[in-house]
Length: 169
Image (cartoon, rainbow, N blue to C red; front, side):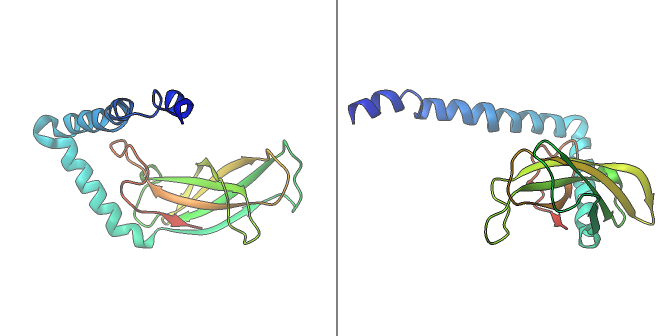
């Protein structure tokens, strides 16, 4: 017990916790507040309008298709190229981030310990539909899977989960 207290207490204590909260949460939040409230809160108003528009159109955002050119077998060190077709409704490609959510799958087919890789718009879009390309590096053997995830993207939303909007394909 004494050894545990001697080795753990210097690392896990309230001083460290408060300093970490300040550095990781409170200071960035204060800086974000300062940025959004400049000039009569012009950037804050812009963000609010953008977020309202995204929320109104989010119900029509949809991953329409995904495909790969690979077979069922891929060697460790290989890459899997993935193409996705995403209906953006009235949004622009810059309003969203499209990601490959991938990793090893368990016996139930669920992805465990996932990684994410960004997909990039290939420049072709028509009628609110955009095509995205991405790759997954095969780092280990075994059964793996992937899903396409779409989420809002804005310079003033620093954490992906903040709007609480996701679309899965």
